[in-house]
Image 1 (cartoon, one colour):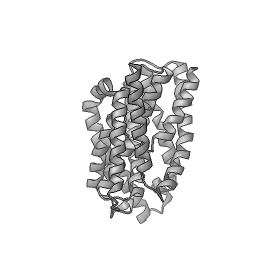
Image 2 (tube, helix red, strand yellow):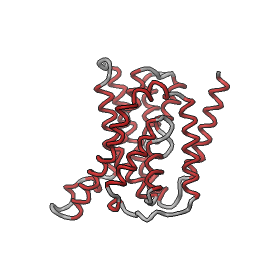
Image 3 (cartoon, one colour):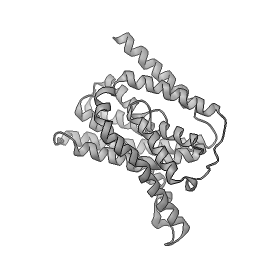
Length: 268
């Protein structure tokens, strides 16, 4: 397959899966194996194109995330600033634990078998969570405390293991702490902004060599496509969770994980 077609395909997958509780990294690792897109640049590519999806959050929620959209000194502006501060605080556990264990996890756990196992485990967790049938009392983003932000950030760290899903980990953590589905999903979006930007920036700085012109072009394709598809995915996801639960995502994860395990063991 042509390299630009690979970048296009991976950008679409990233954009669709980044904010759904199905693991974008897991999907990319699996697809990378099928299209023979592996190696140091492939790992960098998979991380950097997340920035395209992040820009879609900034655009989609621009009114909610822009403190200057509200009058100076107003409660609205203070709420937006508080949201940014809580998102930054929630990122801290990932910075610390990622720095300590990130290299080890990438070298040992970035493989289809780990992805498949975590897809199944996360799917079971989502279904079990929804079967509690206990709506949370935290019905607004503003009701989240800094303690909540730190604890959700700790749940986010589970996503360092590929196949877990950053979105699923933060949504499950938030709902266990008492949020509604909508608040859990929204804070997952907002927490992703500093977290994924930091991860992408760190990966670029740690790149062992300068990127070629062709590699930069591939990244540009992946970024643009992931942005466009993520915009559509966010709009659809927000509409979906306003009336429905996460169980279908759990069953999808289980089915995909079992299929990948079956494929791996048959291929070996």
